[in-house]
Length: 393
Ligand code: LMR
Image 1: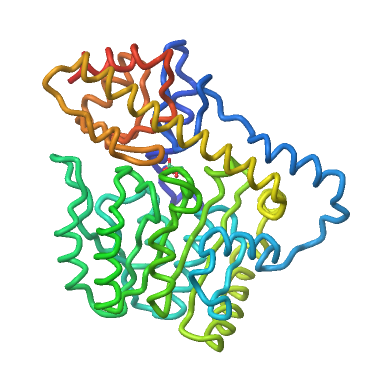
Image 2: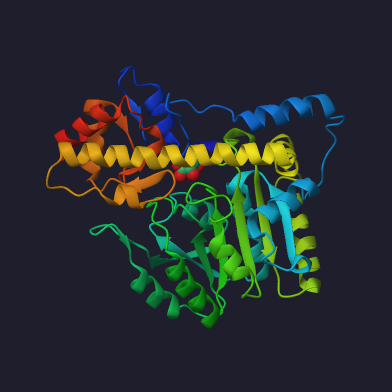
């Protein structure tokens, strides 16, 4: 039966991992997949993760199933990290999921269970896997304007205008912070304007927050979630712990629903647990147990915040360094949006053809859209990188 299948192209983002790995040139640079790298170009295991893993190894007594919702202490910690005290606990339900992607996929299934024909508005552009992941689950996606590729700013007026015309009850997918791929986040005033339209149009906010701590701080980054939680009846939040805990391959995420009242919360809770059982039965435990231990232990938690701050500061430093190098090497061109963006990503703003030349002639890898991950930049490679860009533009 499988002869009927056709091969698929490599994934636009994950495919770059293998391409870069197989490139023999020592000067090659990976600005592709969203993985943090330190000044030495490595993605180390966080110290706090290592400490928690050592304690777990000593203290864990069983590997028995943990149930469809995962670990209750992890769920409580994630709920606190995301909402703090902005939402009434008796209207909230949180489950542990296999990464942020698992969370998005379960959310999609739940939206469809609630409303078979629901539409989800997503930013144009959005994370390259949003459409395959959510659309693949059966959701209908519609674009709202977001990034102005000429001026490198958010098209806030056009976005608000589109949302003002969205049918009541539609879902709006927002990036909680560090918009992927543009790196440009609304200001607090712009967020307020977005929240006002969400309330006016009675839209259902669905927030994907995969980079909490990488924009301003762990506590400031869920700004829009906390604003919404106090003002809307219903809200969906998908968290990822891949980046801020560096637990990429351990698959740690969470999914929360804020519901209109406690009775609905109980129904949603039973539905989501039932849905998970039909999908992957139970989530993986190890990474979530590590996160839970870190968040519940005051010393580990404070050391973890320091580690997140260090990652965020390095990303910001590399943006400044790279922009300064480009100012020198590409006079007349403006790359200043590099330093206005948050987190790992932003668009370089070069053509797909120039992206291919960087790959072929210089061993520099980025997504075809010219999205770069600034974590791949170091003090050692920034000169080579900016020379190469100057040569192709
Ligand atoms: C990215 O956008 O590079 C990351 O979120 C990794 C992924 O799965 O695409």
